[in-house]
Length: 294
Image 1 (spheres, rainbow, N blue to C red):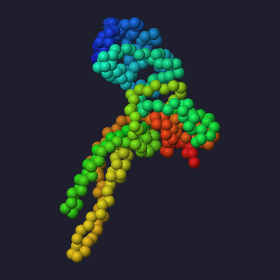
Image 2: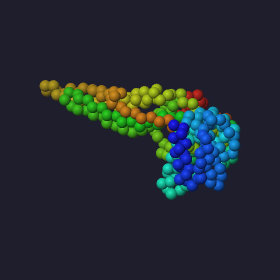
Image 3: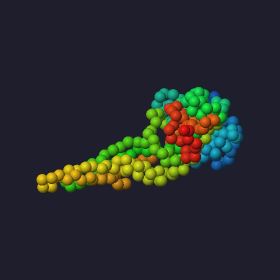
Image 4: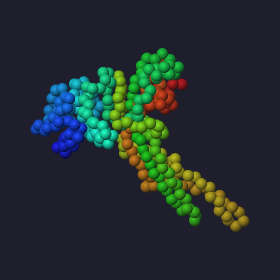
């Protein structure tokens, strides 16, 4: 697998105008600068122009450690991102170039998580939140995990000679911290996002299997129908109430973990949460351990 990944990167580098030569377990690529691509588990070399590769998915803590050490490390997600970026640029007739982490502006960082974009910056949120929280004491950017789901539901039942059908499809979000449900945001989900200053990535507390079960229960409850059916008996009519309830086998759910950026603003009156994507004041808290403003 390692050799195949190196071979793919070697071909991309060549097609992007780099002069490439393998040297043992490394790839040496040269255009205006010289870069060395090597696997992280072959040993850390803190030389300028070294891109360390790993097929693992690095945790946020590991990325922070490497960033503090000044190392450029591409994990599994970053490698896929760079390969995809190279393909798209080639289709657009543009040239792909290696981007090392030190090229990120001072005070900024690129984090590789699936996230809605940060459209509203700290200065804007400070201006709009003063009336809610009073004197501002702290502003923090949080990335709150959500399970983004799409579903298809199809239930058919025959009741007293009548065929009753429920057919629905759609998508939604479920907070992976507190289980609250919400509608998807009208924004493109990014594979990576640049942030400035301090930020916090909240821990997922509801895993994928539990999330799927909870979402299916919500959908079954939402699309359960109580229908009145009129039938004739002699000279009179009787109205029956029939409950049409889908079963789990009638529901197909696909999930992916995405993050919603949220500004947590604390002040003398309490704490408020604003969507960093839409700028809206959130009615529900971003996690399950917060103070609610009255």
